[in-house]
Length: 453
Length: 82
Image (cartoon, rainbow over all chains, first blue to last red; front, top):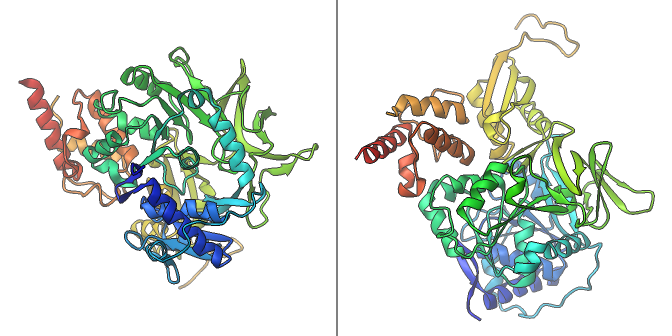
């Protein structure tokens, strides 16, 4: 009963602690009639309890990354009625509520559940938007239900029923929906990895070992990072049965290495946009598939209906969420009334398997994070002295160094200054590897050269 | 193969986010210059050059500057020659 059910570098939780804390947080939120709350994420046990508390109270939560630059974080927090943070390890904003104070109050330990309604918003996640402001995606309880029903019936998950889960993605990144909801729903133990822990590989591997994970939810880049050390193998994780990959392309050679290091391992390669709740398709990878690009889905088992129309992957049904603020983007209603999302992903179906062939627009993925180059360009244009900006993606892809920015200035701002100012506007993973500046001849709005001064 | 600090700097210049020059003493981790993807590329490149480095065998500080990384490679080589 008192076994640890949540393990992070910032502390642990037992099942009774998780229940007590999350019910107190739920009671606190219910008593105040809160409908939407931001949770400053990080790896603190109280953050896990806060998310569970929001789910119990029927409050839509916004996981706000603690590492976001202040300005971008403010834009996100402004959408919430209340901001929760763990004052023990995270910095809050003025008016934010310290979770430690809530869980130490004498609040009801049993929370009253609001009636279940599939249309009720469960969470909002913000991603890169082309305008330069973060784009909010609101996912409903019905969307989460659709995801979970599908996830729990993926053959490898249904057969193994993992009891311990290793999470690598921050809670503000929707890959974490897979491990978070699976763990909350089944009572499995969740072990999480802090963002910068890789810098201390010894510490990283101790955490991985302590997870005793049967299921790992990883981005392919994270598996590649672990594979750099020969001790990432069966001996480190004797009970690891399945890895669920999503967020970016899984290279065949990574799968080959994993099969070699972890005999008997099952690998699930999943696909889905944040707009459709984490993932909608998955393919179990077998060693005989690794001589070519890997499939991302078995068409016979999907969350909702997935089609390829004119070369674009289109998703229909209950997994399809929506944007906040009246944006419609790729969302529409199908002729039969179902919701539908045009992903902007190029795909094809061969022998009942879905393959992902890249983007139809300029969006790129870096460490699983979606980036719209226009987002970076529009933020560069906010910097005084910057006249024009073009962000390019080089062929190497996947890595931050593949992003480069070419900036034309009026000569009043240096490259270093542009980088510093940009880092105050966009998350770390959106900073281009190279910024080059050239001084433009001053032009007025109508394109004529400016004289004088 | 003997891997010099110059080799490390030239690899890092290729893999890292940095506008200025990288010197043997440039701090790589706290500054965010070397991110996890750059780290993967660096280790893969070292392995291709015949100098596989096991990151769990070294403390965090060993990767903090190009000079320290070159020292690790030197140790690996010395161990391999014995």
